[in-house]
Amino acid sequence: MKTKITQKLINSLTTEQKAYRVHDTVQPGLFIRVLPSGHKSYMITWGRNKNATLGRVGVMTLDQARTETARYLADAHEHGEPLAITQGRKGATLPSLREFIDNTYMPWFETHHKGHEKTLHTLDNNFEPIMPQRIDSITGRDLEQIRTGWMQAGNKPSTVNRKMGSISGVFSRAVEWEYIAAHPLAKLKQLKVDSVGKVRYLDADETKRLHEALDARQDEARTERETANKWRADRGKEQMQSLLLPFTDHLKPLVLVSLNTGMRRGELFDLQWTAVNFQTKTITAAGATTKTSDTRHIPMNKETLAVLTDWKKQAGNSRYVFPSQAGGRLEDVKSAWLKLLERAKIEGFRWHDMRHDFASRLVMAGVPLNTVRELLGHADIKMTLRYAHLAPGTKAAAVELI
Image (cartoon, rainbow, N blue to C red; front, side, top):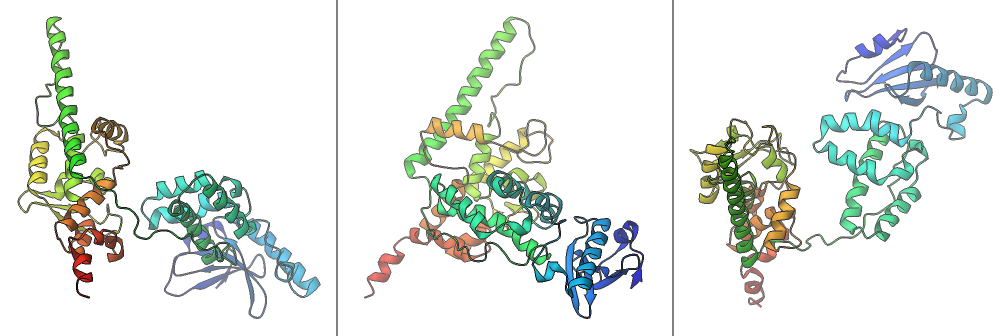
């Protein structure tokens, strides 16, 4: 197809089952290639089967594409081939890493992946030295220096690999979308890590102390509220709501449900009452809220059922099971959680470790690993195998066979 390329035309280009081209009648040699994925690129042709990509539509402007095309053709006329090809010169309009992430990568990532806020936070806070560089100028050596700095600062190998994974995804898309010819991390191997690692779960005494701390926290809140209400009553002031209820706030039910279901924190924050079925005694973690995008149904044991039954009676009208004070989605529980651990004198135990505690208790009770995998929502049994050593007597019985 040949026509005058305009911004209106560009905006109207739709995807088809096969890639197609739109050639510009204003600037000979310039055309736009539209892929089935929706990716649109400005490209130049200067001879039979001689093409090159100039840049992505939306990052490079139409005027820039026409200017760059004219330069290619002038070089081809004078030297037989564009200098960009013979000397490896890149178009001056290639974006910096910062521009590529903000204008191209993150809009795509937000559409296709969950957790984009966390990924953007990782990119923003760990790769400052190379952000201003043009995307094609970044080398494996640049990234190796950044990685070495993290290790010298005490980052764990698994943390370093996770950070590098974030930037690797950026360069993978840059290669796929033809911004760069080669991936700068192609020869940089991941650091070796313990694939099993130490699983942190609560021992019997820690479990006891955690439950005692939850109760003590509630008792303290009730006492403070009753004292405050007596003070207000003596002065003829309006009373605050009594806390003589099963729960003084969301923390205790949130912790108990986490310990008894193994649900991820984000899944709990996203959980709505419509997903809690008191008749079938199940909680449905919808695919839109799970890490693997797969819906799973989690049975409620007696404690979970009792907790949610009581909590529903006092939780208010929000659609969320554990709403914020304003009634919307809860965003953070870190401060209350850390104070609870301090009260319980429990160290080195993260919120996510309640998920490990749930899985560990199941395995130690003899539950098959594949059942544990299904309850946790692991896409791969490899993730669940970290708990295999907790199965009672399995290895001991094996070595007795020889």
